[in-house]
Image (cartoon, rainbow, N blue to C red):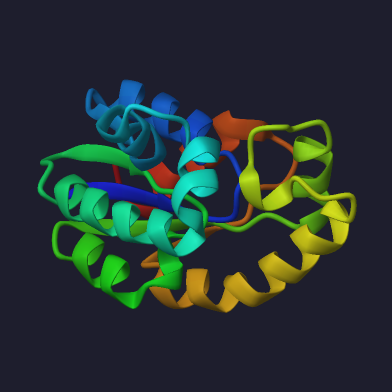
Length: 167
């Protein structure tokens, strides 16, 4: 059974996923990295060339490949839950864990980020709040487990995931 991490951009899926995989002796995969490797270009470049809709189609094909992995920890992109088909695909071989962070946490973590295509705007804070509000119900509905990080950082989240999944 795979452990699939979902949540808004900047919630810590990659950082937590790498640590969790190491502790459990599993391989770690990041679907955004898989997209970059397959396409041979950055997420930003993909967005520039094919837009968000084109990116979501590429993401869907990568999700199908990721779901075929075995005993892995998989970090998904922040928008993966926008397509219910992705959620169904991931649930066939995995348990989905939602890392539920506040808009304020995301804003603090991503205030200087220049690599996230959907945030390259002057009203970044408003965009984060709006997108998170829209996506949160989808994350909650997709999740088998929800982790709400407090102040302990990634190690706390790893510990919580292991406890939730009885690992």
